[in-house]
Image (tube, rainbow, N blue to C red; front, side, top):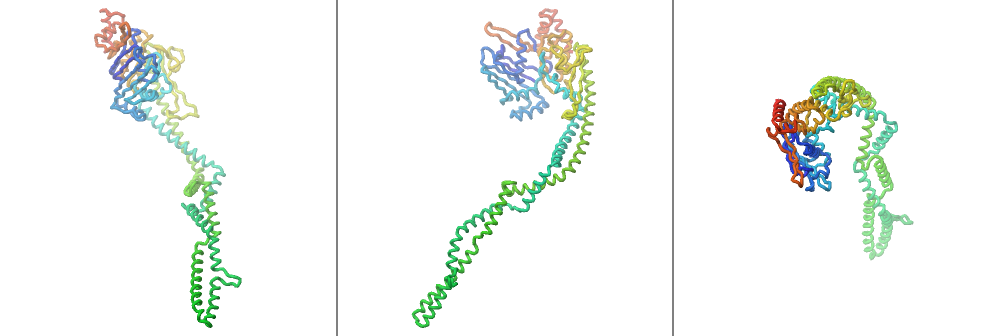
Length: 564
């Protein structure tokens, strides 16, 4: 609930502190004293637009700070939202402040953290609900009527709603699976042909991870060999090639050696030459053998380079079609095989899921109809009770009922069932019922809202309800009824009410007086808590405008009667 509201430099309020308590808090004061300013200040906490015209003349900025003491259930609802926005949670306390300056800059904070207005509204709407002559209450919003009815319906309705939503999630999952399976089953023959061709092409090629790197390295080695091959061939030709007589270099040396030996037989001086030539001949034969052995092992092969280039070409071709790397190409083949398998199974899967969908839809519709039936029972009870409340509020000819519209088939199922719910109201017999927002205005709207709030107060999670002069334009008897309803509502919620009627001031648990005064230069407005004697004085003033004995006696009697 709201425990403290501090207002600074706001219109005619220089500095005021308002500290309401639980129960029914009534704020009164003479016309023009500034009662509406209190609601305007709370409106800033609610995220309403801040106008620089509301800054007090002798100041360049205005501020409002509200302190809320929240029950555990309220903090459970708000903690995830505050955590999402990085707002610290402080043991059930929420402090909201708003400051705005003449240049138009506005700063909002929650527990010290800066927030934007949309975040402020999201959190404050869980703390305060404001009702007035121009009511913006959620009660008049048809989109929330179904939630209010379900809460009123209690455990039986809410359990059915949970069962319905569980079945709806199952239905949605099956719908997605059916769509996916149907798309697969409907795959074109060209898609199937493409997948089969891709798998065949990749698998037949038999790519291995790292193969492209190995092939590129071998290609470089072969290119290097190709550049050296002409030199190798030249040396080989000189060492092993034959002349016109069919002799190699070693053969020619051997021929010369035979001739030298013939000479040495005739002349011993040639023996040394024969020995030396024999040594050279043996070395040349060994050299030729070793060179041939070395170059034959690393010999450039046009056939090999062709094979390497062809293989690399195939690798690059597959990578251009199916993936940047060999791993990706092989993964594509795996995926294609899986898709082909799924396509083959899809037709039978479609039949199976379609059967499940039909059964689930029947179950879902059965739960939805049972939910709708229980809602109608709850709606009948709610209509009777609210109509009785309206009669207590001096609207004897009015009636309230809940209209049910079955959603069209194309949008049959949503998270709330097959029903569209609207609260309807008729002010007079024979007048056709119309939705609340269209029919009710002024004091009539206030009493409808009070009737609904009183019946639904036990299920309404809103901690603080604010009513701004909802007794305007109603008779004294109606004001008395309104007072009793607000008193009843205040047993479940903190209620703040700005009023100008004695009945409400008399029924309150706590009274506050808005008083305006001036020093001749500036005007000041104060918010003053009233003790019991002050309360009698204020109720007396509201009754007759006087504070004589007769009026005070009547005020005391009214307070005692409404306190009972």
